Length: 295
Image (cartoon, one colour):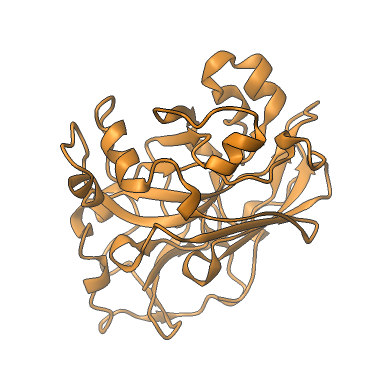
């Protein structure tokens, strides 16, 4: 089962996709896939009764982010051993944390906007963790796992000059530009996911950039949730982007992104694919018409 949101930006309709690929309107259950819904159904998403829900079609519909605007987007840096090595940095002893503005979250196929004058825009395919239960001072990874509603595919777009030269040690200025976090196409309930070995890959203009697995993670999803809960309260609907594998432009192996480039991210059959076009600020397509594709 998968959860999606379809339709114009700001007016997305929540839908649920069954194992046969049939889509159902979820509005008899909830008006949106938000923190309240995830908290009410956390741990039970796979038990949703679809029998009374009206069928819908995804054909020609824009796909939005599978969660309504989160209260917080928390990023994790250098969380893959290969990425730390290509960056010339040691594997961190504790998670490196930064924040992205929640309004960076857009649909999986919406345009990504290059800020005026930006020269070092980079891609980062990531596993995203969506919180389903309030998490505070958790005592174990098992308890933390129970706070995860599900998983999504995320592209942690970054502007490296803003990140490394303008932000100081906390990175957030290079992570928070509008459209810098495409998410989706769907959310998979945590009960259906083994997060220990999910293949993540990315391409730019159909050339491979990243091809790795969450098996290379330094800190796994449950450990991240437990550790973060010692410093902040995670609320239902919050998003954690858990770090990227090796193969980004920052490594020096590839050129940075420019207008006209096309990024493609994959989380395999489990998490699906995204596709974004890079455009200069002021020239992006209206989100209501972007990213249209059949389900």
